[in-house]
Amino acid sequence: MTEKPLSGRIALVTGASRGIGAASAEWLAVQGAHVVAVARTVGGLEELDDRIKATGGQATLAPMDLTDDGAIAHLCRSIFDRWGRADIWVHAAIHVSALTPAPHVQPKDLDKNIATNIRAFSRLMTNIEPLIAPSDAPTAIFFDDQWDAKFAGAYAMSKAAQRALVECWQAESVKTGPAVHLLRPAPMPTATRARFYPGEDRSALADPKPEAARLLAPIFAA
Image (cartoon, rainbow, N blue to C red; front, side, top):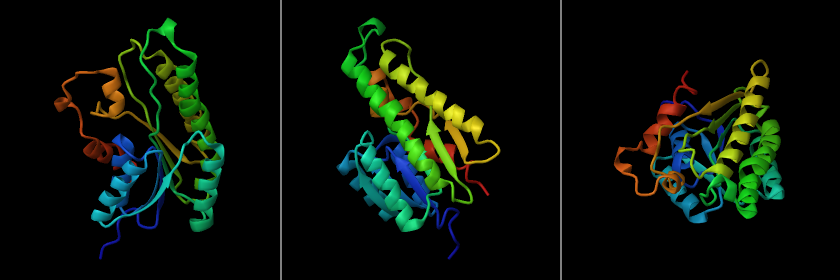
């Protein structure tokens, strides 16, 4: 049997229950990686696990709230204790608050965006960087997006901060690693997009599975 390209690799996917996160987890599993799938939605993770197993892949499910610092630390420690490292981190978890005019952003919506998209994201990076550092090919993958500028102020602010942190890490790691990638998927029929474009004809949007393959395959090409 021919060895798969990512056999023996450990891939941590945060935000793995749906959309580009789930599609990335499935693609990595098909390539031979053992996927550690993280999300809050247990049902979504279980459905992902079924799809991965159906293609002969392997996954470990880790349902948790990424805003829980203790849960993040425990997850990374558990991965280290079991495998001694992770090789790949794919981050697709995002919070989208209610859309509202910029002057009307509510504190509770702003706080939720900050908690998930900025604070939890930064804490994940802090905990996961030393976890992937021992790999001989440490790789971190993030997704950018594009949206109609109207009514997305709270989300846009937090997404811009997330992008800035990724770009800083990308610049800092050019010579030392890990390889940090900031990818922009084509518009997809996700729940997040539906919030921005209600009533949109979704038939013209990209399917997350081939989109994940298009984005990830060049990164892991031999």
